[in-house]
Length: 246
Image 1: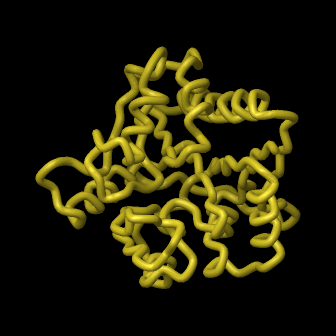
Image 2 (image 1 turned 90 degrees about the vertical axis):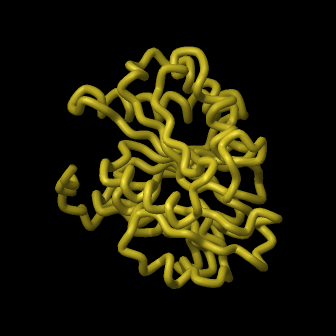
Image 3 (image 1 turned 180 degrees about the horizontal axis):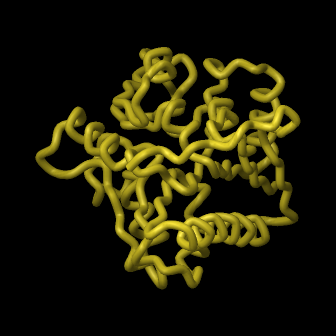
C-alpha cells in the first residue's frame, strides 16, 4: 500500500505536547481514550487501522482500559514497536504483555502480528515486520527508560548509528553492554525511519525521574545520547503526545 502523503509541516508546530495528569487512574484513562480516538478516526476513513504497542511495566493498565473501548476491533491490526528475541508465549516478551493486557474484552477479536515464532530466525522475523509495516500504523505507543532509550534504541548501543540511518522500518539490534536492555540483548526495533512514518505517537511515562530524563533529553538536542528524541521526528508534522503522572 502506498504511503499517505504527509501535509506540510507548520514551522510554528511544537514537536511535542506535554500532558500532566493528576494521578495514575486519570493518566490511564486519558491515554486509553487518546489511543481509541485515533483508531476511531482511522476506521472512519480506512477499512482497517494498525496499532503498534510497546512492552514494559508502564503501559499494561492503559492496554487493559483500551480493551474496553467500543471500537470495531475486528478491523484493527495490532503490532509491536519492538520485541526481545523471545517466543510470543514467553512471559518476558512484549507479545505476552499484549495478549494478557489488550487482547481481551472488546479487543479480543483484534488481529495480532507477533514478531517472532518458532522455527523463524531473527533475520526472517525482521523481514516479516518490515512487510507488515508497508501498511502504516495509525498510532503507536512508546515508553522510555531512565537511560533515555525508546523502543529498543539504547544509548551507546553498538550499531545505533546504523539503525538511525536505516531506510527500513524495523532492524535487528544488539544491545550488548547496555544496562537498560538487561539480559535481553538480541532484539527487533522500529528505526527512526519507521517512527517518522507514524503520524500519531504517544509517549507514556510516570514518576519524577522519568520526567527529569525527558526534560534533559529535550534540553540536549542529542538523539544519540537520548534516543527518545527520535519520537519528535514526524513526516506529518504532528507533535508527539507525552502523557505523564507522578
